[in-house]
Amino acid sequence: MSKKVKTLTAENLVFADSIVQQLDVLSARREQWEATDYKKANEGLYALLADCLEVFNVRFVKGSEDDKKALRRQLIERLTAAKVRVVKTSTTLTMLTRYVFNADRKRAQGYGYVLAAAVSHEINAKGFAAWVVKQGGIEEIKRKMVKKAEAVAKQEAVKAATAVVKGDLENKALQPLAHVSLEGLTGTYAVLLVKPCVNGGADVVGSLSNINEALVNALVVRMAKAQVATAMADKEMGDQTQRESNDLLAAANDEQTSKVVNG
Image 1 (cartoon, helix red, strand yellow):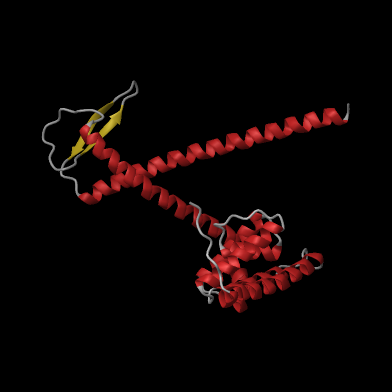
Image 2 (cartoon, rainbow, N blue to C red):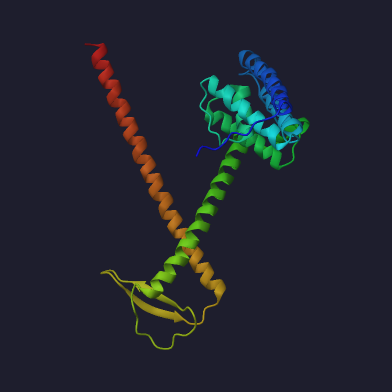
């Protein structure tokens, strides 16, 4: 069953229209900025982003939930009409900047990161330019925000992997990896220190009984982090292989095109 689209009121649409009109003015200013002093200074960019921040903080944030839905719906419709691919999960800040700057997704997302950072630091439009300069510029803020986003994603991955490791330990209690005949071990869990052998296997060189819950949890999290690190390395390897394949395919297509053109 398809999800029913909520019917918005005339007031919601007026709210959205008024903001879009402001964005249209900013977009026109952006065109003028790009045509004149785009290559000269950052002041124009900072001013435009500050005004986007003003629209978001003063207008969008104070709107009702239906007002916000109306604006997002209008932005998606207008961007789509302009043949700009937009993801419905994109933040409103990203869509605002994409609409104003007529930017590709990567550039708009970067500006969205900067505005999101300003919002999180409670920076208003008036103090935006000075704050950007103090932070080291647009690119430095983007770098910090991307790094933060990656850290959050990794944290969530570790949390999910921790649950998997705990479940795996419960299964291994029923079907152990191996059984060691070692006397004197007590408690719910014990730790064995083993030394890997060159020819395979491992030698038990130490043991610790009655380990507390904190140590058990720390070891579980460490196992989860190891799983995440392996998965991320595998993904990076796969991405690199895909990029190389794409480069080879592009090169082959260029060569084929050249042959056709040159007869």
